[in-house]
Length: 503
Image 1 (cartoon, rainbow, N blue to C red):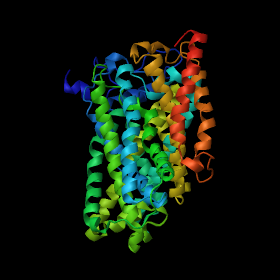
Image 2 (cartoon, helix red, strand yellow; image 1 turned 60 degrees about the horizontal axis):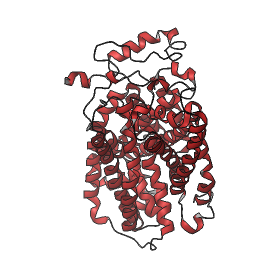
Image 3 (spheres, rainbow, N blue to C red; image 1 turned 135 degrees about the vertical axis):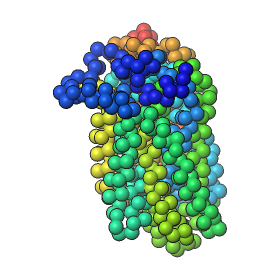
């Protein structure tokens, strides 16, 4: 297999035939776009390297990429940004943990959390299916709509937080010449361009985007390392540590519903272990390093008045502008680079948002993926502008809630694959992906997920609600979602299979 064939836009088959979709009844591209010569537009976009494939599975002959190391850079760039840094600041700033306790919590829990999305990514080469399509084999044709909606909310929320951070950081460089609103729009438009182009451009961008960002963090630490130190914090308790860990789950486990979206063009025979390890390292390294850095900086803020003033209401951009001030103009340049670090993360979310939207209703399959990237961008930018002044409250509440449902979701799809399908991809009928009558009813998965919250809710510790169990234990909602949904799904799915006589 030549390098040229591997690196060309993956939607073009090796034979040169530009027809990229399987002929599935009711899913051909007609209607809305054909009025405007949508097929001609799609053909032209494919010629310049833009991916036009949506959620339809990639046939085996279309899966030709063997360079599994590229997935490392996709996730390293996605995690190497100021949102990861801000996640670490929550330990001292919100939960009152010192540097040591924050870093140990970050290290231990993230090493566990990253296993889930990394494992989900190994399914892409074997099936050629996007993550939400694979999930239909657990949640069914109609049940997956609930998961798609929750996933869309999660990706939209992540993108909003990233846009706010990027916009604030840009505004901090320009003083009064650029508002946070304009900064948010700039970040959103650049992210749209990357996600609009699709798989090939995304992978290319993520391979290079991490380096200047990592360099900026290293320079900032080099300039201010002597300032870092622990102020007085209360001794850590299990209750506080578990609550912080529940928030951290939102950063990593939330990637599980997107996992195979970025691995469907790898050859089916690539090493699953190799792909898992590359993905795991790409996820865990930047998250752990930058969250620990954020914890160290946040713990030092109260003892440095200039930092404390710049860091008002979680303004990470303003904090970095002050930290990089000693290098003058070069510091401003580095701060701009830091503001652009969120693009790699947002672009991935915009890309998967467009795929999820195609599964909401059959008519949406007729709308090209890249159109939904534009729609998603408009929604995210508008909401980011509205919510930019309450960043920290939004961050804590959103990440904790995200961890609950993704914990239940991950448990259900993994139990389905490892137990009910015995870990065999041959038991996934590729022809069933868009046929309600051939897929599971989804009743077992939906019921297990929803009913698990009967235990999750009393274990939640949120600003607006503290459950009776959480008052004693701290937030263990994520852990309970994982355990309870597994028990319920095992029982319900066993009954479902006997009742319907099909996987």
